[in-house]
Image (cartoon, rainbow, N blue to C red):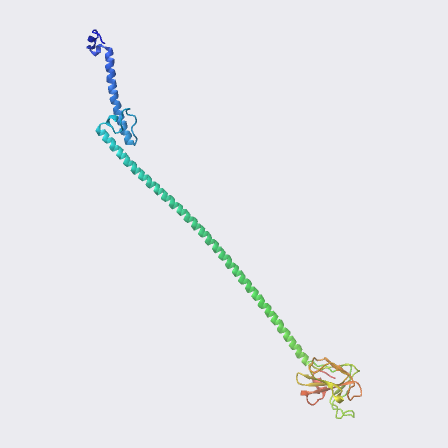
Length: 316
């Protein structure tokens, strides 16, 4: 409790009491500092709202960021703060929309790039396949051309071989024909080691008529030959002629060989010039071993063999 003596001191001017002056100064400082602190916090809240942040720790008794008591803002400041918050939220929404659009555009570009890459890979694969197909087609065409060329060469070689074989066959045929013609035209004497003992149309007591041929006398068993190529039309015993063989030649002339000891041919046999038809003998009407040779043109009456042989290049 203050004493009586203290009352006059309370009514003294402040300049006269240092302690009182200090207390007044302290209260004034606290009020001024609180007011400034409230203004700074309000300005900070407004700036924070404009920057998209929230106010922090204004007072332990604050009920919320929008309460004037918690921020110490005037109604106009609160409206400005709310408007700033709304603008900031709208701006954020627009920014998010722009980000979403940017992301969508980036995704679309990435998808287009991926699709383009796939298309390029597919085009490259198709181009490679087309190139491979073209190379295969060229190789197949080259193989076909080579096969065709080889087949043509083989065909040509075969044709040449056939032509050569045909030519050789024709040559052989011509040679055979020439040989046959030569054989037909070739003529030999009816025997060898002979001497003539009777001529054509010669008279004598041994024949019923004049002699009809040439007698080629030779030792017994000497071969008797066909004078030209021909076919045997007779091989038989013919009375006074003894064993007799007749040969028909290509021009129709028939040659006869008589008095032979034996036959070496049969009817129907083909003989060449010089082929043996028998051997010198003494069968039939004869006085010694010889072959009686006759020439019968067309198989008719006999003619003189000597001129006929000379016409064919022989001189008996």
